[in-house]
Length: 288
Image (cartoon, helix red, strand yellow):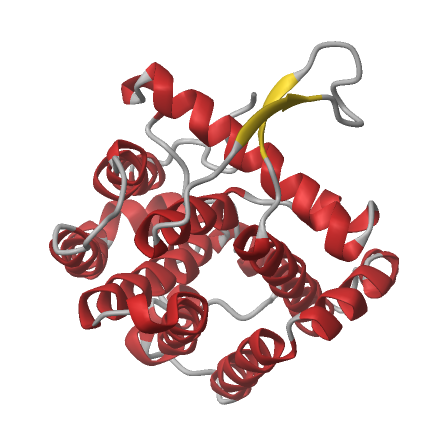
């Protein structure tokens, strides 16, 4: 469910490539500080975006230094030095990933060993950010309630994830949180949930796991058929969500240059949606 909010790499300025890499590595370092080394394996691109976005909206500039890390021991790389905000987002990264692992255990009945491997990191994250943990727990509980009902409503099932992202943003941004940011993050959350469901259609069908698209289109047996026969429906669903993201993103007040966030919100997620709608491989993410 995570890792979809990435850049449109071919159209990324060199300066923003450096910033994005630094933010990614900085978040990894932050996870290590708050949750330990194991937690760093849970790092994902969605939270890298949130870190860049939140720093810009709040007006807290990042300090970039060249450092070594576990994976890059010889050549130093640009790293955003951990600060109070990145530490909070690092804890959130681990919390979200742990609940996703728990959701996999419930849906597929497997993955308990993997979840137990990260349990200590999750406990540290929860202790550091109990309020963020409560927000994630509450909305995952709401999501599971819809799953237990075997709901067919795409809008209703995606609502808890959208609500979760809006509430998380409100907690992180506080007095900088606006109605436009609320709508932006709400629709971005819905998009993350639904694009993952669409991408995982065949896997969920095979495993008999809950998937709202499987429930909504019971006459469809595979993703390729879904994308072909229900193309207009899917274009309407994702078009409405992406349009809301686009319109609200234009109204965000930033404190610094926002070419990087614009690339992600105006190009990256649109390109990712296009790739999935064209039945291209989408689990691959940008490698640094």
